[in-house]
Image 1: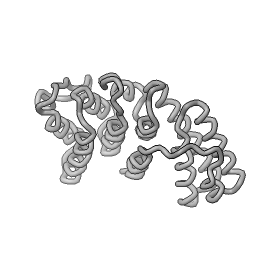
Image 2 (image 1 turned 30 degrees about the horizontal axis):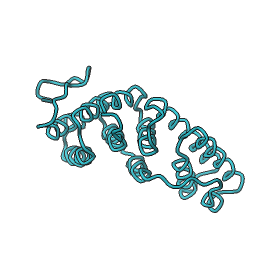
Image 3 (image 1 turned 90 degrees about the horizontal axis):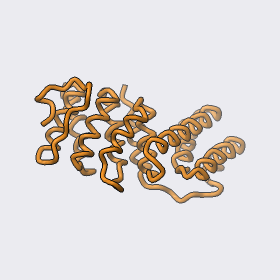
Image 4 (image 1 turned 180 degrees about the horizontal axis):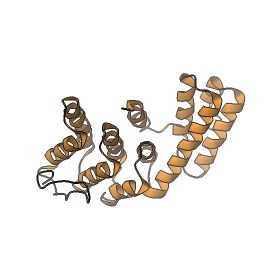
Length: 214
């Protein structure tokens, strides 16, 4: 089952919003007690150096869908935990966009070690938000999490651009729609995008063949 809102939500949060001591959006959308509880989670996250805006956005999304208050608060707290896990994997220098997209990948079953694998091949200071969005996308398409991480890590090591990652998503989606298996489409499209760039070895245990990647 495809969960497109996860990817779309992650991409919409790539631009951070200004922090607020008391978010009027929460007060307008939620009962007072729930708004206060969500605000407390957001304030705690902000004090830890984590982004608070994704937490407010999660609560507002739940309110817009008519979710019950307990579920909204549980979802916000779970997201805060995923953001902490992402920061632990990526390090204190990770920005809001990276943490938000990495947290979305964790939700889909990606492991902290997979996030570290992608980060390990990146040049110092290279933002990886689009790489983590692509990682989550491939998992949604049905590529195993570890294999997806291997593909994305290879692209990062080969200095793939944000445009390359956007193209990967478009092309794999089209291939899967046309009947290709997700993993085969991902390997083939990554290979095509990386031709002419630094060569990358197949991820260990991915079941690749010599034809999969250059």
